[in-house]
Image 1 (cartoon, rainbow, N blue to C red):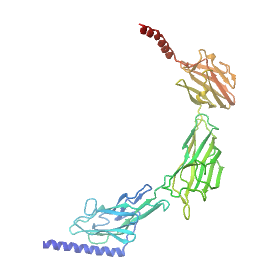
Image 2 (image 1 turned 120 degrees about the vertical axis):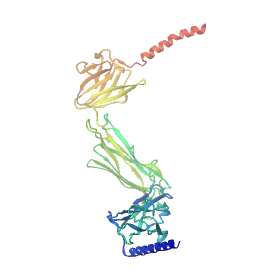
Image 3 (image 1 turned 45 degrees about the horizontal axis):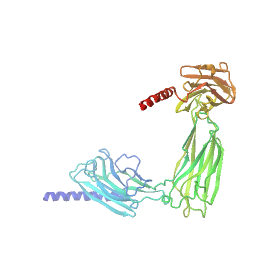
Image 4 (image 1 turned 90 degrees about the vertical axis):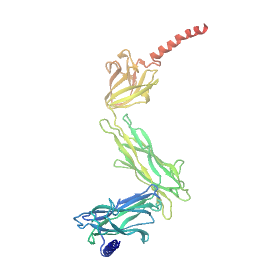
Length: 507
């Protein structure tokens, strides 16, 4: 027992010497931080902790302080004592607990060891500090390698509102570190702090181009018009306490593909945004170098009410200005909300409301030389194929007229040709010369102006056309019957069975 007491006193005396050495180093030596570390270094891991913009109050996270790169080359005598002070802002995060990794596998130091400091302190308001100091005792092996000193768990206790500030942060700072070897000699080392950040929750407000995707082609689409809206959604009282009082957008498009036709402001209107009275200093469209741009700046003013909800900012009408030919690729234009801003009135200045932005996309597919059209009739779909070096403009259902046994379409271009292929179970003639092809009201001569060819399933009619816009009508002598042969046979059998049923009932 006496020998044990002597041994313990010796260990305590040695540790006291080490602590005194650590204190001297704290006064005269401050470790520097570098991007690369040739020798030992302490590091807070992960380097960055970020919460938000989703709600994060009461969520917890854990960071660890590691000691790295202790080798027999840079610390020949090995490490025998460690000391750290980790500091943070307790107004943002709250200390929950710590787990020491001293004298255990994966940790630092070898046992037996003595822990001189393991405590939470409030050293520099408003920062809290955790202080750990430990040393191996006599008989312990020197320590080498990479190991964890401790893990610290914190709880998120503050998250700013977007109208207060967009984020709050603090360093997870190693304000003091020390390291001694087995000979009680201070070991030069470096350190890397961590960083904590909490982002303000975003609002659910969003400005969208709608429809999100607009596609024309591969059929002829030049000069067709379409509408686009820029809409504002989800301005909610709980997220935007003072509502919306102003809006600004810069919207652009490819003016070589799209021709601007008109726009309609929806400010102050039913289904629109903002409330009257309104001031609109900018409401301009410019076309410059193949780029179209629209710039809107508008604001309500007293005594207008704050605006909440969903609404349309502006409506546009565009015309298809260009359509290429295969094998050109499809052409597209981003319907680009280059800049957007919505503001909430506040004292002394209005505040921009965080919001999402969703652009639109316009695409025009190239004209095809072979176009397939679906003609629906009596519950059946039939595919009519038109091959041409002109642009085919077809009405719905190819203008199929069962009474006149004809289909109709338009073709426009310079001099060109058409080859129309029709399935025989849809339209047919018993004799090829009975087909009729009419261009702009004038029948073409079959065999001379129109070449007819057929197989068991289809008939093809090939003819030329001249420059300009033309209306093409193709007539046959037969079309798909209103009742199929199978249905006719079934109906006849049903009628034949009626007298038999009557006789049976009489008996």
